[in-house]
Image (cartoon, rainbow, N blue to C red; front, side, top):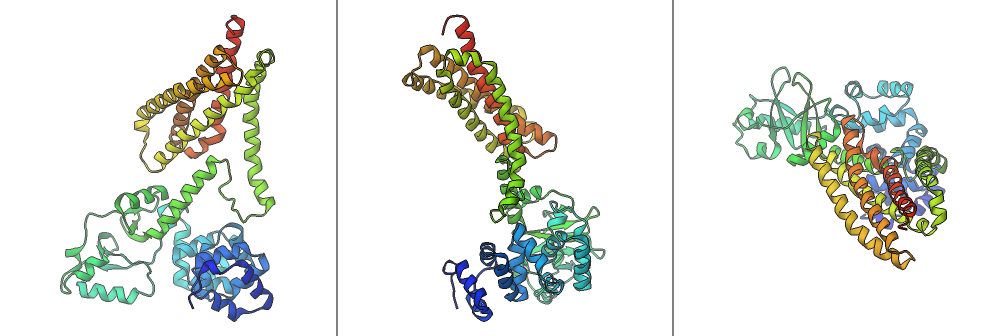
Amino acid sequence: MTEDIKDIEALELRDLYRDGASAELLALIASVHAEDIARLLGELEDDAALWVYRQLPSELASDVLIELEGVRREFIVSAISETELVEVIEEMDSDDATDVIAELPSEDAKKVLDGIDEEGSLEVQKLLKYADDTAGGKMQVELVSVSGDMTVRQAIEVVRERADEVENLTNLFVVSGDARLEGVVPLTKLILAKEATLVKDIADKDFNKVTTDVDQEEVARIFQRHDLLSMPVVDDSNHLVGRITIDDVVDVIEEEIFEDFYKMASLNTGERVSDNPGRSFKMRAPWLMLNLATAFMAAGVVKVFEDTIASLVILAVFMPVVAGIGGNAATQTITVMVRGLALGEIGLGSARRVLIKETLVGVSNGLLIGVFAAIISYFFGGNIIIGLVIFLAMTGNLVIAGFSGAVIPLLLRWRKLDPALASSVLVTTFTDIGGFFIFLGLATIFMRTGIL
């Protein structure tokens, strides 16, 4: 059967759940990818999702559980029995099993560790001691290591013996007698070598590796920079302890990208589209309260100039324009800065050059946008002097946007904080306050001197 996921809808699964048609369910999803099944489970009610999940074979259920996110995975894990959970986890690679067990309450985690086979339990316990966002937390212990004194033929036999245990095999790791990493042999190189050749003679001695404490972002950068498919992980004494594969790195990149997007939008990184309204409310409300506080700071600046606005009401028409353009310009700068910092394109050593560049961009955009804003203001009832005020305010605010959008992420990185936090909360406050102060301040000066 070649059922296309596009032809399967959650409604069909609901009908099968209602009819209790487990055989028909298995036939329907026989060739559907685990990620797509996870997506469908996210669209079902809890009871239906649990029923569908329980019909899946252990190996498929394992893959689906890995793909489930947030509240839905928490629900499935808490709803199935301890025996079912143990069966599912035993099908997982060590890194995935660790991720699931780490989310369990300590008492439940202990029961699961006691339930799975002893070797798997020891592997997971080793991985649990590493922070989740480090190389140690992302690695898996399933790998193939061989002695450099083995022949190519012997090494190939080892690969065949471990084939069922180790997935996505791209490299063999050459180790000494005490498990110190000495080299890496790509699988293609091994297959093409003559059988009598010693492994150490074809091993790459110049290779990429990381220690267990390296941050996951740095791991992703190494994979990206060198086009790797897998990379060994060692301890401080260069003992081989695991490997990281490209599929884990893709997950890291996706996680980091969306984490930055969430933070730039003032959202809690734990929120998912499938969350219930109450959970989303609790996660969003604190950020909105913080935004409210910063908005009133900008409002305080406006209040200082309320007499000016009362004397020349048309100023109120142009205030949102000055603040809005400043906010958009700041968002552009922040987006470029956060990406550059995340990919390692910007360091603290290049801060001066980046600040000068972004400030010059702000000046250039300010002059250009300011001229057009001044011209357009004329058709909204403004005069030449009001156009001049808008021009100067727009130029000044875009300089503020460029400078603050660059300097705040750099300062946060210097303080070892996430640069994405510099988004709408901090920088928009600068552009709102700065834009209002320059615009209304200049208008007040011009009015008091009789120019306006």
